[in-house]
Length: 363
Ligand code: ADP
Image 1 (tube, rainbow, N blue to C red):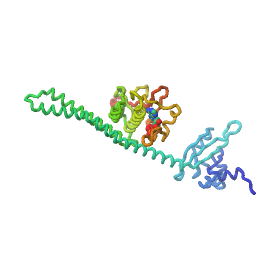
Image 2: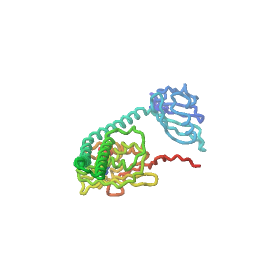
Image 3: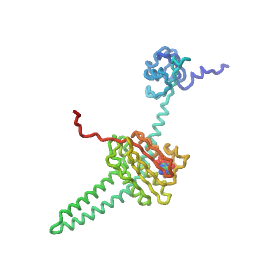
Image 4: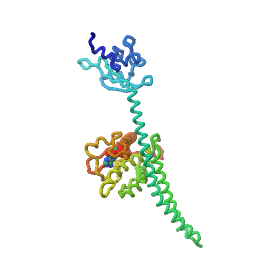
């Protein structure tokens, strides 16, 4: 009976294995992927790899490997995705004399990853929609206040209008109060728009950091008030700007404030603070809560998709992993500060500068 040997095993190995000469021509191919890609040894031997259809390598890759670097890259051929790893073969003096390579078909893996990403996003959207009712309740409460102000001043206007010589100064003051209260109403309603829409395809725009914090705080104020949890934020210079997808940032901060809320509702004197600090080229937004904290052993896991310690129905564990993706898309960083007994999540984002209108050229 014939014995197994490495050469035969390599022929059925579910990859493409190859060796190239240092001018990029194919010396040898093996593996079952070779025949799938129609790269049969007898047909391709001696051909330039980067000029051969179906060979998963481009000239730039071959050149990089010639420079002595070991690396891998992804490439698409005929609707399929491949990962190729290249290793330079060197003589005993370190001179590259050829290139060894291995290619795997990663089409399925990428499809699964994409499917999981989409699922994660859908879960996030569903979770946000399910808390919409809660937020809407809070918003309704928040609007009641300025509405009461508007109604009170409108009644005063009615009384004044029946006077013989109404004071213009008084009328002016009342009008200003009504305008300011209605503007507050619109800001609160705008925050609701920030919460409910999917902003992941919006264009990046320059926004004021204070505006984004205010919009997020507006969404949570009532929920915090009803649970007796203090929510404090420092005053932020309105000129501090970030280039962002506003809706995504509001939703990310909202998620941090929801986690902080959930964490500290079990302690005495619960408190959450949002602190914005201007750094040299960045803006740091820190959300701190005085809840029980995150156990040392779990700190590394909180950004993992589907990691949750909340009860079934209360959490699905996608908030922080989505937040991480969003902040990275904004060229920023989200970190868990573990040096204090409080829990602090810090978002760092690059500062943005509005283009000056003044286009005067230097003479
Ligand atoms: P979810 O809130 O649905 O669980 P997240 O991704 O937002 O998903 O959070 C993942 C986990 O991180 C939470 O279940 C919790 O264990 C932990 N976590 C996040 N923020 C805090 C916090 N402020 N205090 C304590 N644990 C937190």
